Image 1 (cartoon, rainbow, N blue to C red):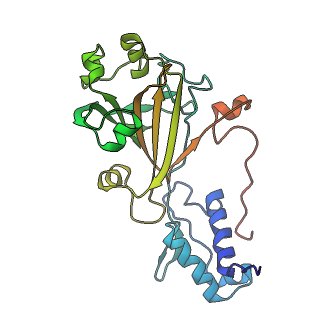
Image 2 (cartoon, rainbow, N blue to C red):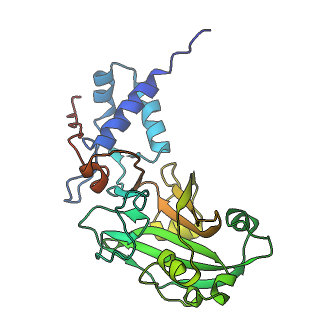
Image 3 (cartoon, rainbow, N blue to C red):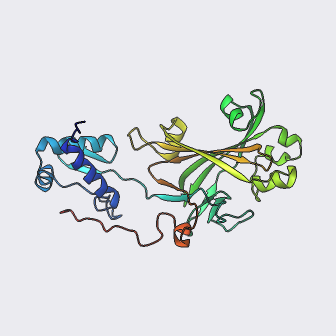
Amino acid sequence: MTRTTPPRWRDVASDLLQRIERGDLAPGDGSGARRRLPPEKDLETHYGVSRNTVREALSWLQKQGAVISERGKGTFVVHRPQADHVTLSAAALGLAPDGDSDGGKWYNRDAFIPEGSTVTVSPVKVEVQEGPQLISWYLQTDEETEFISRHQLLFLNGRAWAMQTSFYPLDFATAGASRLLKPRDIPEGAVAYLKETLGYTEVGFHDEIRARVPDVNEKQFFSLGDSAADVVFETVRTAYSENGRAFRLTVTIWPADRTRLHYNAGDVPDDILRRPGQGGSRNVPPLDDDG
C-alpha cells in the first residue's frame, strides 16, 4: 500500500504551533506588546520552503485561531489565557475529602486545583423541571420524572472558569433532602448532605467528556469567539450509591482554550498529584526564533 507524504505546509504549521504552545512564540511579556511571527521571507529561509507553502501554513494556523494576520503589520499570535489545571479524579485519590473547606484549594469534593488559586461561585439558581430524556437515562428514572437542577457559575481568581449544573430526582426533596430546593449553597457538599439525609453513599462515579461548539450563553460567559480554538469541554459525571443507583448527575462546562483536565490512577508521584501540569522537571526549554 502506497503511503501519501503529508504536504510540506503541514510540517511548517505543526512546528510553528508547537513553538507557540511552548511559549517562544507566545503573546508579549505583559507590557501590552503582541508577539509577531517572523516575516514570511524569514520563515521561507528557516524552513527551506516556498512562499506559497508558508502562506498555506499561516492560513491553517489562522483557521485554528492560533494567529491573526493584519495587512501591512504582519502575523501575530492570538492571546490565549494561561491554562488552568484541574484534577477530576481528586476524590478517588483522597485529594478532596468530604468537608474540606480550605478556602481556594477545592471548588468541590471531586475536583482539585493547585494551591494559590481562589475560587468564587455565583448564587445558586434552582429550578424544578421535567428532565429531558438524556437526564432520565443517566439517572435511571422514568422519562416523566421531575428533577431539581442546581446551577452555578464558577470563577477562578476572578475570571470566568466553569458553568456547573447538578440534577437530582425531585422526590429526594420530599423524602428528606429539602435543602436541594433552596437557592443557597450546601456548605458540606451535596454528596455529604444526601448521605446524611437519605443514606446515599457515593461508592463510584462515571465521567463522560466531549468537546463541542459553545452555545450563545457559553460564548458570552467565557468570552469565546468563532474560531476552531473556541470550543468547550462538557464533563458529565454520574455518581453511584452502594446499591448501584445513580443519584446525582453533574454537568460542567469548561472553556477548552484555558483548561487542562487531568486524571490519575495508580501510584503517581505526589508532586504530580498536587501540581497537575506543573509537577516534576518535565518542562521542555523553548526554542528561540532561530529554532
